[in-house]
Length: 198
Figure 1 (tube, rainbow, N blue to C red):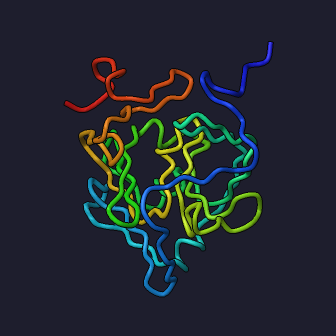
Figure 2 (figure 1 turned 90 degrees about the vertical axis):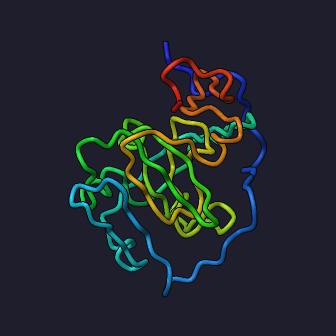
């Protein structure tokens, strides 16, 4: 029997809805940079210009996209740099168990390292073989298909390697720390012991 593709409580809408908090930032390729910092293996920060980031090896993933507001967009083809590639060029220290994904305007979402290193997690620059539109996260958004989409942060500017978990923007405002759509982990009051930081 084939596994269902639609998590409980989700529906497939017409079209592709777009939801975000705040205004759409303007991309300035000459000054844009991508930073990897925190508990790095070398103890140093890794900074990439747009040209350097765009030159990293690329991959593609076909994956569904599940918003906590209950719509799911099925079969998206994302292209970009895998999280595993970023870990290769900017490795973390041995004790790192979580990451914080930082975006424009100081927005952040935390991920367990096991979610960050999942094969389908990538820093997407393209959707269906075209550059992602500004309102969908151009030039770079992280895509974590197996979690609710607030973890798939738009307009990513940095990855912080963490030795201890820390809640991100929506997690501090009552969203679940892990965000597994198959378990309907929408809100922090649903967290079991050990699923979130103290």
